[in-house]
Image (tube, rainbow, N blue to C red; front, side, top):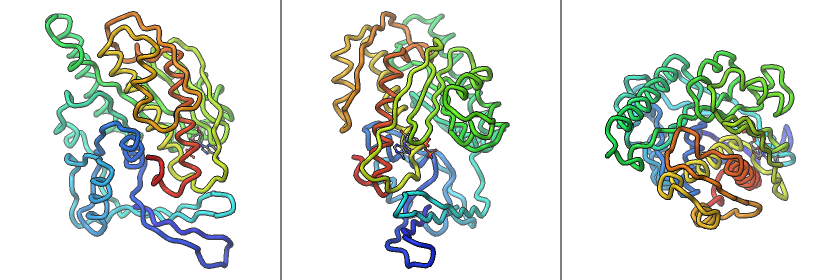
Length: 340
Ligand code: ADP
């Protein structure tokens, strides 16, 4: 939960104040849903005050939360966000009354065959690591059953794409990298490692990533850069709005837009196998508002779908450009209300 206060100067009254659902995964779900991807939020929810606000809001955005464990007698984590009207900068006071994090046991309740992509937040490391391993085992089993049973349909049995965000400046998050097909590296994390630009970050982080992983690094008004599974670097500038109003959740928005784009590319890849660029263009652009500069030219020959085979240079370049446009639009808005 966020409480937003809009302030002009230190001693002045705030000009506005509102409540907003928050948290990285929850924000990412909001944007995914607005872009037209069906998605589920999976995290612990406090059964105390604010629960109905959170549930109503998720229902409004069509976000599934049906598997979330409800925790009694512990309050919901809250943040007070002070936004500067002049610069759009934010000051955040966070309070967490120790709401427990998800466990592997919670995760094992899910039916993995229902998911095409699972994004993890790098939080409670040991548990998240086990969850990622659990998905990896599922994917390995799938490959095995595809080998031994040729009747298995690829569309319903494609491997789950595993992504993770290394967001907070905690070095131990690097342990999650070997399990990620797609990794988002935040500017804060990169700077905590002593890197001061995106190419330095991608070059160094790739040493810890699994082979064939896609790495993506966003950097505020410098836009974003990414590395394909084949080690090709692609880049997009930022798309600043006329006025920067609210940068909170820019990274979550960026991640959601990349995932929306790449997951659509994956599903189209599985469905059609061999793609023509015009078919892909219309399939991807049909349900999104922001279409400027999205150029695609798919040269996909194979019918097989491995974890990252669908992420070609052109696909990734278009995904990163799209995400910078969506995130640029978001920083021009209070919250997310007019993204859809
Ligand atoms: P966060 O601060 O939430 O971690 P980032 O700095 O990673 O967010 O920014 C994510 C993306 O949001 C950037 O790649 C960029 O496209 C967009 N963005 C963020 N800040 C701005 C800004 N001031 N102007 C334009 N785009 C921005």
